[in-house]
Image (cartoon, rainbow, N blue to C red):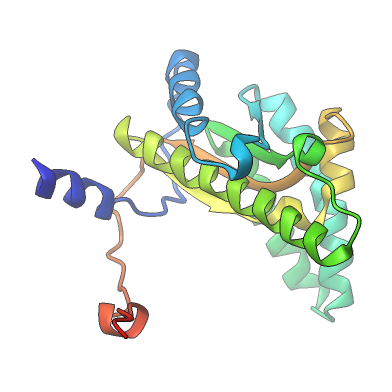
Length: 203
């Protein structure tokens, strides 16, 4: 049983292509409820989730983010033809995903310190806590036989994303998740060998 659970956890993969079938809302709610059981610093639970199911809402977010994305790609010096391709690919990923979940962080409940060093550590704890909820979300989706992928685009357009979805000012967009029934074959993934990433300190 233990080995089966480890095999399940290790079998999760990032899925970027989905069948168009809608995901029932009760399934999305179950996934998010499991996500909220992630550990968090001080048990402050700084994660917030904005769920996008209707296409017009996803399209509104895609169009809003496209302008920021275009600006940043132009700053990078990319040719116009490549900018157009990248923006369209980004738009389609958002619009075509059956479920789009925006993961935000709310620091309102976190501790506040007078010195910058501890305050930075507190913010880092909030970021780590929010990220743990994101991983829990992906594992919960995997348990529902759904595919999912994490993307970081909202970090580069926080004000735009917040405005497009009329989110509270304290909600800081951190990541975006696409969920749905996987389309096509799952690609194998290579992992670094344990001896490169694990060190036991015995003395």
